[in-house]
Image (cartoon, rainbow, N blue to C red; front, top):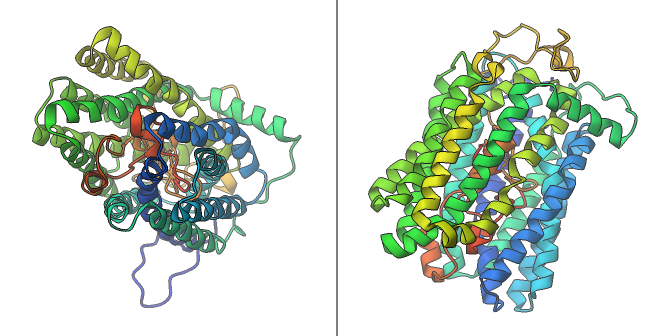
Length: 519
């Protein structure tokens, strides 16, 4: 475990808030403020350069493809060398890319290919950052209060995301996209400086393995040897894909045609953001014994926004539904992260996280690409009801897995079973001691649908890639809206990639954690 410095005399910092935890949380707040505004700014920069919806989609894909290509390698690298070095390096890449991007936009010389290259660098940085961030956050917390620490982390991340999206939207309207991108670059620099001070002396040094491929095989064995793990990642590969289609394609269209424009949709997305904060607050107090059963039951309400858009409900009703889904996602995200913290060996966390991220986001580009053809073939209302039904079905199927129903929170001090590739534990402990499940969790930038798809250096949804992926799908308003509308319709986890019906997961350069599942 990471060594934690004692709090200075007279301070009232909670026992679980060690030095590394405080640094990680502070860095995530900084990058959440910058990254959520930058997502809106990126979309508007494309429009200001004369681009259209198709160009926005190209920029989004330029960010997403490197993420997919390098995620597994990033996880293996993060388990081979000190994770904080990987995180700082990723933050540096994102600082440079965003600073160049800002300079090009401010000078009025930004071209489409340049924006694609620079956002591609952000995606590559995210691929290395996310697994390292998740492993580092989980290593920074121990004891009975681990889940409370994770829940507080998620609450801080989502709160900063709400503020960052609102501020970013306003700044895009009043000072322009270039300055918002410059602020995001500065946020990466500050976050990287904070992470450079992380103390890894208490984390056992990893022995050299048989090479990168051997590390990837070992991570795959760890992943496939745990039925609860691969079954939930498979579930969220469908859930995240459907959320992406619903919230980034159908949602803005319903708002435009039925609800009066971008403002009601922006308010509804803000309702989701407030719900995630409320859910995180709830999980600081609630410690369900059956972690994955409670978490999976919390996924069922995530299908409600799709049903609400199919009706469609008026703006007030839609906002209420989005709030409930935000609370539910945090219940899952914290439960998921607590389980990962409790069950996965510390030295394999980043590799397992990489497989989680990869599986959870793999279908997202396909689903968003097929959303339009599905509407043409079946109708918008039918497609929305179908999405709600399919999310409900795959969630119900996961409950058939015994490990999902029976996984329980272990009291602090009991050893965590170490996976050996055959799904059986060997009775060992992680990092020299078991990580007791706390009362809720979240990752520094997105884990399994708990954040954050967050981009390198930013808030990956604490809770794992699954949670992060889902959260990252909260989208910016449709491209037809004006800059003024963007300022009012911005919402947490606003993904520039999600705009224009060709979105990608929230892959902001510093999302520490991704769509809704690494909260």
